[in-house]
Image (cartoon, rainbow, N blue to C red; front, top):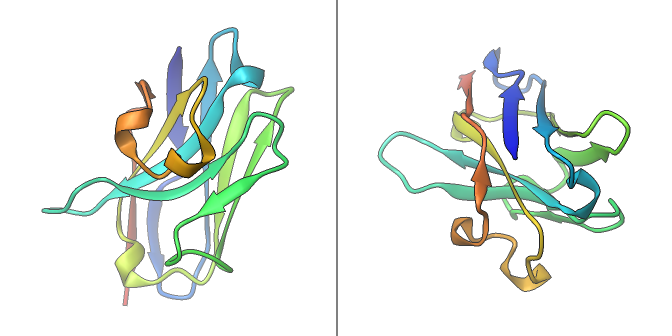
Length: 125
């Protein structure tokens, strides 16, 4: 499995960005997909996740009502639509995936075996 994240950039507070992660492999439909982010000097933190069917989504409290995660089974991609961005959203965003994660554990980086290379998001005030 390989993951390729893209879409990062520099945006002013209140702006929007759309991140994409392309999944290369055979098991996209069987994989839970997630986004994490890491700001300088901090640990990697959960942002959002989506289950295999796309019917269940999970969000960190800090991004609820502002971010939307979705997946496209035809293109094998997962997208994170980010709106009303804040300076505290700044960081490197990573997509991650694995096959079977209990929904109570989706926010833990240790549960994910496969990671993309990250895409940087900078939100200026």
